[in-house]
Image 1 (tube, helix red, strand yellow):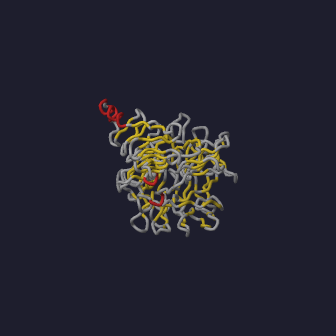
Image 2: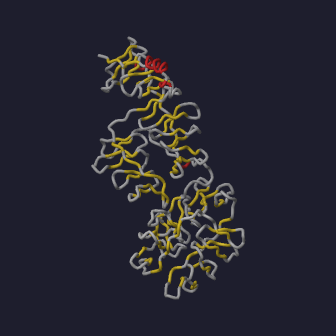
Image 3: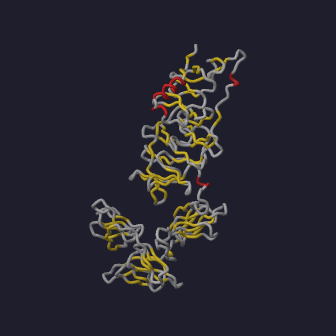
Length: 483
């Protein structure tokens, strides 16, 4: 929780509500009443609020058996089984029923299931977490081993069997795995598959609830997470107005002006501010300008781009393959060219995947990362399209008819669009047409824009050499207008 100083402090209870005074906090599902210094709930529960503590480096709490441990800010309490469980608050009172615990300076009233204090304070008691975390080596992360002995989920999650027969991870502890092998529900509730709801009374004593089911995250066994890779349509995306379209791999989103804009992600969530969008499976947090998945921050949201009428294509360095506009050419493991479905992408060295601009490929995790914050699923490359052949355009008199069916070029030339969008002729066979429409380059070369020269794909810095630049300027040819 943020302190009044702007730094972060720690509220000694999990999933707390941070109060606006920058000093205190309240339990989940309560509200801060700053005027009275209390935490209140709709059912008239009223309790003292908690003071925030300065944030410290995490240090686990070792239980009396010397073998188990709880997270920092928790209390070790013995369970009926004789093992240790973790009470989710510090310096807690462990109740005699071996299942529950109460805050410091209160007493357990087992008959009513409440925590009481001499001054009349009555609050719901807390349930212990069934198993304390086993102590591990320094720097080693805690995890939950799944029944197959090969898969594991993060600490605080639950292993659930997926329809594929592999294990996935439900993002809550001691969850109920639903029979559809896709969803899960909190402990103490039942899955209503038909309505996709969790029905019943959860273990946290919140009363009878009806809530949406939680999606099982498919990250139990295989690190590459193939079920999370995004497949894309091969055609441009037509917007609902029937007049605008977005590039392949983008999503149409309405703007404040009533027109359509393009979110640079496939199957994106359009945010209610009419300006931004978030990845599939996340929600827009308009107040913070973030994209969240559940209660977890995933990434910054993205700006929409204006929708276009028609989109062109991106020429790959070999001059023989192309990707749709808004995609990036990346080499596949086969040595052929493929298309990453996002612009200015980072091509991963596994020859299969790619990541957004300014991120790094974490091949071992199957993720795209930036610094220590952003973590997102990576994208799968798609095969590049072969450029349309020119043989079928050759007429009897050995001239090439351009795609507009009006312009013709001499044999062994290439039709290229000029600045005006009309077709002209490049004096190279199977040439690479430069985007400016002024020049073209030989097959296998790349058109650099600044300066506009022809270079080999691997010679990125060659233009800095005067002699090389002279040669590269000679290689480029002007696109000649035709009558």
